Image 1: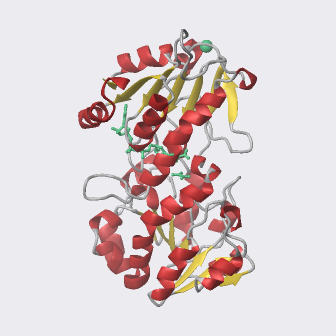
Image 2: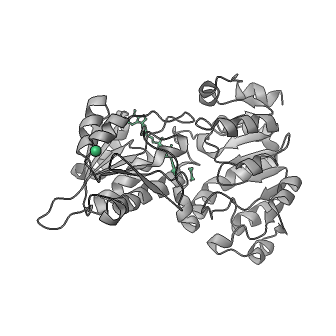
Image 3: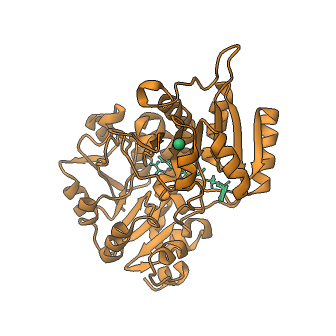
Length: 373
Ligand SMILES: NC(=O)C1=CN([C@@H]2O[C@H](COP(=O)(O)OP(=O)(O)OC[C@H]3O[C@@H](n4cnc5c(N)ncnc54)[C@H](O)[C@@H]3O)[C@@H](O)[C@H]2O)C=CC1
Ligand SMILES: CC(=O)C(=O)O
Ligand SMILES: [Mg+2]
């Protein structure tokens, strides 16, 4: 198969769909890989590194899209990239369609086969291609929150861990999955007072087993959420209903009632955010203030540590990329029900229920859609 790796173009996004080591694996399997010039420069990989791994370098994204049967990216395709997709081309990347009507419409129109990293499942009910970036973003959320709490950033002027004789900050993490657990780990390490809310009791048990009495693992009712959010110095939003727009658990009234100078980091912003006052921001201008609460809502947080993130992402995506290339998309998807969950759009049909529901579009069963494609 001919595989294309364009340079990422989202604001301050330096990750890349494949590192040279992954390219070499594909070439060893008999595939051809085209990489856009300087695609890996942001993480220290030169064109020569890619050539040494067996890739060919092309001067523009348009060249890569024109040649490739499969495009491997990191972030959802931006409008100019969507315009380059064509019928039957495979797109394998993060998509986050449920909060993004223009992207969904363009992908439907393109006729391409669009497989989202974030909805691929595993046999334990996990999300193996989202998990590595959730670990990164969860860890980063505490760094971002610590900065937001600094006075010069309009925060309360609190150190997360306090000092001897002075109370630590209260960190409230909503959602105890990959993001939440990683955030809790960092917040505990810094000595903050940490509460994690989730409504899955097994998740709460796992938090209790991991952190003991260093984390209060609380069942997430509206009451509990309101109590802890109003007491918080820092709120981390990490809930997910796979493939769906995030539920707005923190309301505008909660934000009004929070302490002046408190901060929120809405990691779930890539699925639309779980805080009513959230709107997506960029690494260039990551925060804004609503009712004296500092909001950090960067939708591609791992892009700030692209070297760590690209390796972590590639470790997870590589077996799937090899499978797609070796078997073709039909066999690769039909052979593996967990991988089939990644299919969101195929040849004009929406095959992910929550996305179809979000936009009142027709839902087509993915297996049927692939069999008939
Ligand atoms: N902004 C960014 O750069 C990044 C954002 N993310 C996003 O972070 C979000 C969380 O991802 P993961 O932690 O991997 O998901 P996950 O599936 O591991 O965890 C989500 C948790 O939310 C819980 N939850 C669902 N509804 C809830 C409710 N009403 N109250 C309390 N908890 C509830 C679930 O039980 C689950 O434990 C996703 O939207 C993901 O796309 C992930 C990586 C980077
Ligand atoms: C998951 C995601 O949106 C990211 O890594 O940017
Ligand atoms: Mg207030």
